[in-house]
Image (cartoon, rainbow, N blue to C red; front, side, top):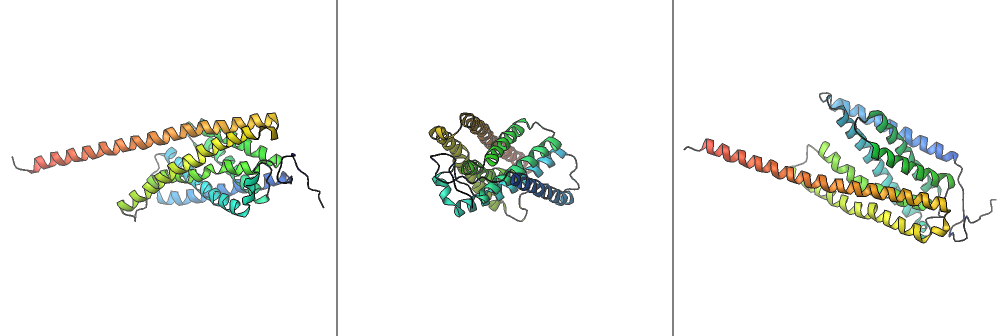
Length: 281
């Protein structure tokens, strides 16, 4: 029987290292899973869009966004399950360890590896910021998994995916708008997605980064100096990317409103001109 010991004197939970071989196994399984989902959804899309073969990059962007939505949806559900299974991890996220949470992080690492190679192979536009983001996240999570330490805060970081569900749903709604739904239903659905997007963005992107930086300051004595600096740099870089992403989100929202007003004005002018033509002089 293994004797329990504590990694640090301030730890609430005993240290239970997990064999790194599981990183390779679960990350590889996750990578294969998204590879299969990608090929399956591509086959369905080809059947539906045989007449639309011109804009390959736009088709790739739709496909990539769909896979990102699938990952964020699964990840969000698993995070909720992880919290319900072990709410005690909030007592000390730094030392808390269980195999379910460990596997969840491996699942996301596998997705980020898949998305990294997918962007490299298929994107014809600039994806430099996305690639840097993925490298940062993969390095951060692998460091957590290899040391079997800081698993709880790894789930804090993954909670950003809750916002990604709404972020990707906005795009998917424009591209794959339900044909059977009425215009009023589509507007209501879009409104709920927009509200959920802004609320979860503030809570799970800005909020998590702020809480993470605060805890890194409070618990700096529990981390090796190099690990502390590395983690602060990772969290800060994600925070900067979130600011850029939020700026683009607001900018796109405002520009689309102006476009809709412009289109409405053109439509009204056309109707006025038609009326003048139809009405007798």
